[in-house]
Image 1 (tube, protein in one colour):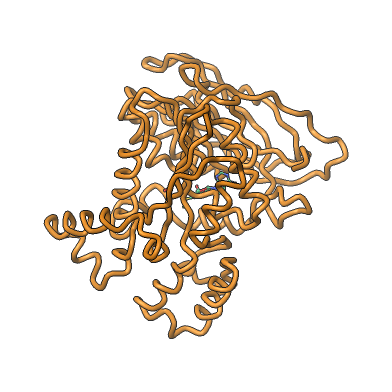
Image 2 (image 1 turned 90 degrees about the vertical axis):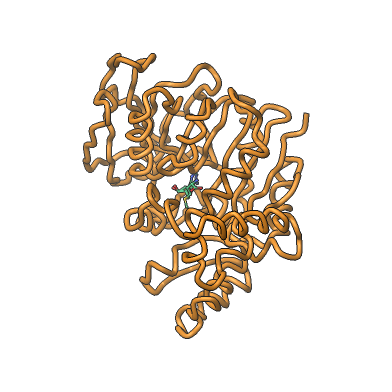
Length: 369
Ligand SMILES: C[S@@+](CC[C@H](N)C(=O)[O-])C[C@H]1O[C@@H](n2cnc3c(N)ncnc32)[C@H](O)[C@@H]1O
């Protein structure tokens, strides 16, 4: 990957208790074209963050400290700075460094902070937390949540005593995570930054565990996914564990059949391509049909993890076949039925003949000792 495009607008709570340090930065490429960007700056001197929006013209690759504020707050044992770099948006360039504009548009129209609160989103969260509980080292340990969005998982882990560092390219998500972190002053995130999983600005070997729950389906190009996985390899300590989520190749098929979306010829066109090569594209404008992404066959996820040098452990179906169960929300609302469903899911979660029936897959791997 060239140094032309850097992960950009950066907001940091100032670092953790020593686990994850920032790497050095390159200077901006003076030859890089100037890009007009929408910058939303979150100034961290306010307990809940103040948002400031502006338009600015910068060179791709330019980074810098904005020095927006520096203040000690009660209960916050470190000073805070807001940093700024630039995340270019738009069509991928030749190096595939640019994150797709439609991803930013998608997250401008949907709400990650509440997505996991009910229905199949809650099933995804409950199962993800159960899988993490069973496979994470005990706290205290350093966890990087790359693609952590509004911090639902990161904040829960911080409450459990982990030192959690969150990275996400969507400024709005990072602002939400910061506000939520400030709202749990005894269990704040150690850091919360805008950045790209393909170039994580953390030190080699700093993490006991990495969550990569999102970037693998937003990175539609295999080389980019491998780059993100190699970054995980770099930041994990030997023996450290990766949790890597993917969307199943068969998610649209099962969704389309169970909700009769296959009656819509536009949906069927999207579905055919998903099944052919996993490249999910939605030119319809219908938000329900998701955004530009890549849907993995379980075999592909396994192979990509190993190709990055990590030692593959297993793939677990997160929601298994439960998410497309008839009247799922009704059953999920019944505590006894919910327990039954979760127990059945755990029985089949690793069965290779069934994991593709899940909406999300969870690959678990370790950095060799
Ligand atoms: C569906 S959300 C999942 C959020 C959360 N990890 C979860 O499991 O609920 C996917 C997240 O991945 C982030 N993402 C997309 N591309 C990324 C990249 N290249 N590097 C890091 N994060 C990325 C998005 O901004 C978004 O917040």
